Each structure stands twice: as structure tokens, then as C-alpha cells.
Image (tube, rainbow, N blue to C red; front, side, top):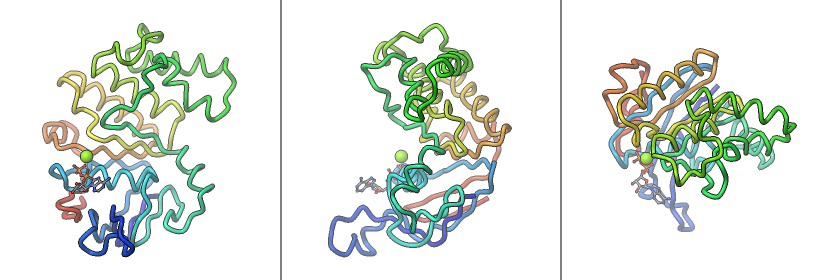
Length: 226
Ligand SMILES: Nc1ncnc2c1ncn2[C@@H]1O[C@H](COP(=O)(O)OP(=O)(O)O)[C@@H](O)[C@H]1O
Ligand SMILES: [Mg+2]
């Protein structure tokens, strides 16, 4: 369901698209089956966030072929990509919550964009916030929450639409050990229900407790897959 074939990514601004030297990802080939779980590992600067940006369609491959949820994104039109993006939930490293909207409205946003009826939205969001342990903070504004609470709002928003693929960029970076463990339980439960999940991290303690295949990046190259 995800298949990369010799994908390269350049942030280059030159007429040559950055050339060989501008590539932050090179020759990336891997596959993740439907319903798979993968760690995405590598030191800071290795290209984890860049690879996730390709996966959630914020960047297009500069080279190679990328098939995401069955769609060849290197060849897809803009409208295909908009629909595909709705099937992907992203937990950003810096949360990206809307500060002027309540916790409830932040989590409701993907459902409202999808045109769901307001009655159903209310029930779904309330249930999701219970699931992440934030039922009591529905009316709060994000800046008044702790880092861990904001992270859980970001997770609730990423999964409220029941995406087929969830991507998380260092999601436990702001969490203490108990919160990180709870987050991993939530992701494991979604994975059991059939959602494909890719989690970027450099926290090896998590891996020890949650063994799963890993994609390993080093300086823009995939150095391990398994
Ligand atoms: N928007 C950007 N423009 C230019 N270079 C970038 C941009 N984002 C990341 N990079 C570069 O790409 C490389 C990989 O970065 P990144 O994907 O953020 O790695 P990681 O998430 O593993 O720390 C780094 O050398 C970084 O400086
Ligand atoms: Mg990163």
C-alpha cells in the first residue's frame, strides 16, 4: 500500500532542482503493507521529517516513484492528492493546533472539512477526547494545556477521521514516560484495527518496549529496512 522506488527529494531552489548535492533523500526504496507498523529511525538531520513530508504529500518526489495508499503520487493530479491527503492522519512534532480554537473545535476540524453533520461530530469528538483522556478539557484553548495534553489533542485530531495511514513525527518528544507509553498503546490499538502507522523517533527505549520493523535513515539514505 506504500511503495517507494528510488525516491529522491531535493529542497533545492535552483533551475536544476538542487542537483545531486541538493538531495536530502536519495535512492529510497521500501514497501509497507496495508496495516503495517514501522518505526522510522535515524539521527537528527537524517531525513525522517522529509520522508514523512513525502508520505503526507507536503512534498513531491524529485526523483523516483512513490505509491501511497495505492496512488502513484509522482504522477497524480492535484485533485487526487487532495482526496488522498484526507485518508492520512498526521501528528506533527510541533502539534500545529489552532490556538484560538477550543480543544473540541481543533479535533472537530477534519470532520467539519469532510462535511459531517454537526450531531455526529459532537458524539465522535466527545468519544475521541474520552479515549485520549481529555474529556474534561473540551472547552480549553490549546495554549492553556501542558505539552502532553496538546500532544494528545494532536493525536485525537489525526485519528478522528479514521485515516488509513497515520504518520507521527517524534510524537513522544514532549511526553514523560507514562504518557509516552499511553500514546504507544493508543497507536497499537489503532494498528490492531487495521490502520497503517509510521512513527519517527530517536528514542530507542520505545523500540525496546514495542518491537516492530524499522526503516533506518542515515544522511538521507535508507540503511536498514526490517
Ligand atoms: N525546508 C527545508 N529546506 C532545505 N533543507 C531542509 C529543509 N528541511 C530539512 N532540510 C534539510 O534536510 C535534511 C534532513 O532534515 P529532516 O528531514 O528534518 O531530518 P530529521 O527529521 O531526521 O531530523 C537536513 O540536512 C535539513 O537541514
Ligand atoms: Mg525531524
